[in-house]
Length: 331
Length: 248
Image (cartoon, rainbow over all chains, first blue to last red):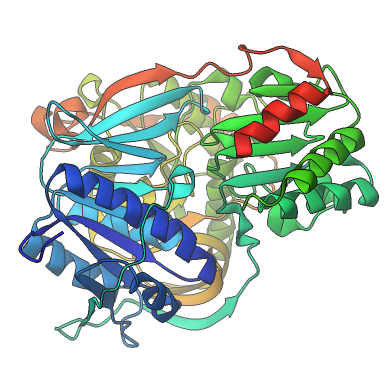
């Protein structure tokens, strides 16, 4: 990477929590892979309450410049949008990648409309089309039964919101000292929104992991649950729950996955005692490999699982835990 | 004062029959509909409209909204709109909304159940250049000038005062199911007139909409074989070994 390459790939990260670091690094790593094929550099733009923390980690990688979007107290709802609108118009990058978050979704949608460019939501993979040199945006559709490859028509500013859980962080720490450039809103603008109150809520953010272990109703007891959670901890997995498990009091609501909970996009999802109700399965569209463990042979989950294990949940969890305990840590 | 709710008529039967009600509305859209009806009750002079873009069959969903208590319905339907991406969809909806007088609020679901992009709500706001508040769970105050609402975004719960007109998307929470249809509503829904708009009515050219107007293009799709490649197996050492190998 040299200093004279322009930043044709841009990454925009909204970091509201320390758990945003891992997915951000994965996305930055992927961006370098794409940029290498285009003989280009990567520009990383960061905003959010944990920006300082994230930048302190990003510094050790070989970036030329890290851009920090300065929060504007007078205009908390518009400043990032205005700054980025200006930056993108000036740089005219080929690819703009947004790290998936609710706030970034609003930002991406607004920028997409303002800059009249294509935007693809919730991509789980990205490639460069060898023929057209354009960005291929890969996302699940129709309840995860289809993978759609989407391209933007224009070559400039191909935008995608990305769930990077399935990527690997291949960044190598190097002795480097990137410039941190603070970007401010130039013009004073009155906002139509004002924030009256703001409280932090527990989100059980552990779903941004490579592996997820989900607790369903079939787990049925606290002892079984604790055994499975030990297994999750052993493999460094995030934790999920079905609505039924929450209703039974086995798990806290913040872990709920599905229609009224969160969506996940991990590599492997271990589902213990999950029956497979469609309300739950909707949250799993982007999961790569589903492993279902259930003591009900007729459970609908077996129709969609990649591995269906029939038998006592406790026995299965015990075996898995023992196997990993004997072979060490895999985090 | 007028509140508009934008709904999507689902065509996938398996999806729409999720709750055994034979409705083509998703739970997300039902939450948006319920929120609209709550606002309608706040003020006697509040008028509500439902707007959808889709085929003629979408009239069923519009009539359903009327049965719940929405005042009138608009269907944007045109062959040339097929293949529209989220940007074109929001552009067309925004054009239709601009034709309606005294709109104070536009209510959408968090996302659709089939496309699940969640981009249409924020994009409508961007097209109209008005504020967007996503994930709204409660409206605390609503008047001619502004609205105060509570919303969830990422790891925050916020109370926001926003100047109207604005767009909101409604958070889906199981605590607030949709109300029952009213008898008057059901009667009215059967024979009320649905206003129809095509792209000429909205002054949209063919090159601005449908596949031609969209900024994204689906290059190809790939069917994922799920659950068919393997049989259900009993717990065994070899199977566990195989799974352990996946993680290494």
